[in-house]
Image (cartoon, rainbow, N blue to C red; front, side):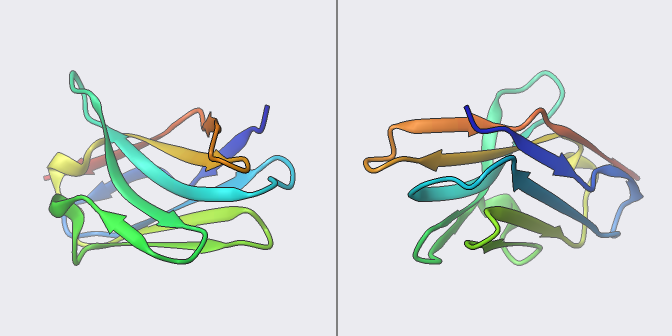
Length: 118
């Protein structure tokens, strides 16, 4: 089982920025995608941003133009630059990876708290 280690959460005022980082505990063979999910208090976990091995990305409509996902394939790391933060961005952010020859494996990080004050 691959462990994902997240860092970079914290408390920030609305309009501020944070950068989340996630590193795999070991080299992952055949990564299909890495990304970030957001779980607001009392709500389901939702996709924020995803980046595939070929570099293509997907973003939730709510973060387009504000968040940018990037990755280092060689280091098996993924980052999420969050600008223009809003109170509704508050919640736990989970790192995610899908890997294996046919994407048959998944791993999740333990989550990092982001709190945006108004």
